[in-house]
Image 1: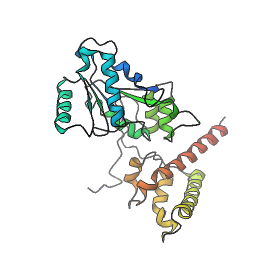
Image 2 (image 1 turned 135 degrees about the horizontal axis):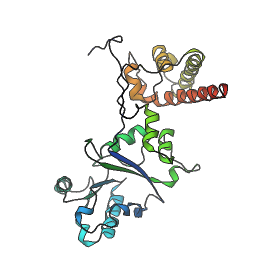
Image 3 (image 1 turned 90 degrees about the horizontal axis):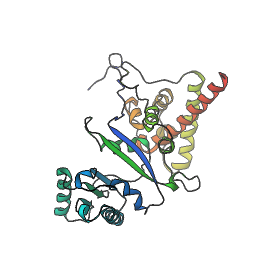
Image 4 (image 1 turned 45 degrees about the vertical axis):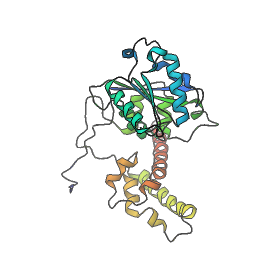
Length: 291
């Protein structure tokens, strides 16, 4: 489909899912299965168990988590808690999924055989995972991220995106953190006919210069023994688009890169981190000037 730039517009509907309550809980360690107790605590009959899928990292954790939840729930509810992983027999996996759909199974502990798991690398991936809890707007759902304390400790913390770290550590509304990061519209509104925000003047010149320096450095450090030139790694046209448009994630940037940038998936995050840093520095300079 051909899009005419003068007759088309970007309609920002946002990606917020108000029907999904998003939470974060800290774990003492990767084997702290007591963190899961809240799922079954207080339930006396199957209907009181919330329909839940718990994603874990491997088969050992899958069985350990299942054992813990069955133990806490008690014998009368243990049969309504099941596990799902790649090495389970096909008949067993099919039965578990069908029983989950019917409501016979209320809590399913699964590995990557069923879906993704663990603390993701960025906020975009987390929202995709959390969205699976309530695909329909009419379904009230709850998505809980279980986070090892070491993830946010300065000495040992995992290398995750700063926006996701902000989401984890905020004491305020996590929906608000995501709204800011993704430039979501105000509640109950959309933003038609809104073009992407553009950088300009000295700030734009600075970002162009930094991107030119970045591609030279990337050429020397990553592609020194190839025939690629710096302009092949980040072509001038892609550089100009990235410098001009304030796009925060690869998926937002991709539609504006014409022709496509071949290194987008490989180097896109590095470039966006650089321009985000430069934007933050410019915001700080602007704040000081207007203080």
